Length: 392
Image 1 (cartoon, rainbow, N blue to C red):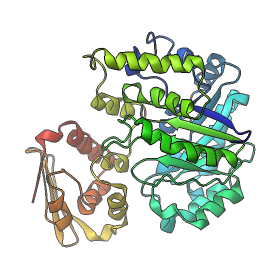
Image 2: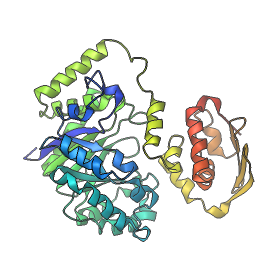
Image 3: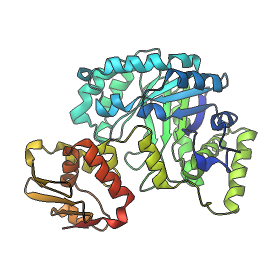
Image 4: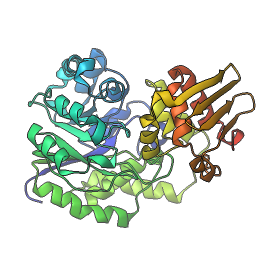
C-alpha cells in the first residue's frame, strides 16, 4: 500500500446504543472514542452551522493527532444546491471561519449532494462551486446519483484537487476513482430502510481490501468512515476493516472481542433506542427536507423524476384540513388525512401498493405542498406506516 496514511473511524460518535459493547458509560463518549480511533466524521455540521464554543470544545477534547472530517451544511448542498447565485460563496466562507479554530485537527470537508442532484441539470453549479473552494483545505464530493459516473465529473474534480468519495451503498457501485492527493471512503451499509441499519459480513469487508489498497497506492492519505451506526456496527466493522488491512492496534482488537462477547450474551435490551427514535433525533438536530423524507418511500431515481415534472402539470382540486386532492397530468392523487389513506391511479403506483412505495406523481404533490405540511404528513406516514392505506 505504499506510504499512504490510513485513517479509519465512524460517522458520528454520540450513540446511546454504543454504551455496553463500546462505551463504558454515556458520559464522555467522545473522550472514550478517541482512545481507539484517530478520526471521526462530524454529522452535526450538516444540519446546522457549529457554534464557536462547540468547535473549541472539539479541539480541546481531541488528542494532538486527531482529525475531524466535517460535513458541509445542507443549506449549501441541499437547499441552495451549490448555486453561486444563491450566495453559497458567503455561506462557505462563514462555515470555514467557524471551523478555523480546529486548526491542524481539521481534516477533509465532505460535500454530500442530494440524490436528485444530477449531472444533466447541476453540472454547471458543481463546476462553479468547485472554483470557489480554497486549496488549503481538503474537500471531497459524495455523489448520490448515477449520472455523475462519467469522465467529465472526474476531470472536474481532478482540476479542482477535490476527492471523489468512494461509497458502499445501494445507490451507486463501489468504484474507485482517485481525483486528489487524498481519498475518501464511506461505508453506509446495504440495508433496505435505512441503509445504515446493517452489519457487514467478513466476506463483504474482504472484498474491500483490494479497493482500499488500490486507493492507497494513488494517495497520500486515505480517510474511511463507517456510517452503519445501529447497534455499534460501525465501530465493529471499522476495526474489522483495519484488521484485514493489518493496521488494527491491540486496543482496537480488544474492542472487537468485547463486541463478540456482547453478541453471545443477551439480545438487544429494552430501552435501547429504536430506529424510529433515531429518525426523530435526526430531525430534531435540524430537520430533513421533504426530498429526504420522500427517500424513505421511493428511490432516488423516482425522486429525480418527480422533481422533473413541470409545475404546470399539477393542479390542486381540493386542499382542506382533512383532505388534499390534485391532478398530476392525467392522473389523480388523493391524501385522506382523516382516514390515513393515499389514493392514486398510475401503473407504477399500482405495482408498489404492497410495498407502500410512492411514485413520481405522488412525490411531485408532496414536493409542491408547503414544506411544513408535507413534512408533517410524511413523518406521520413513516411513524404510523401500518395504519396508512395505499389504494387505487
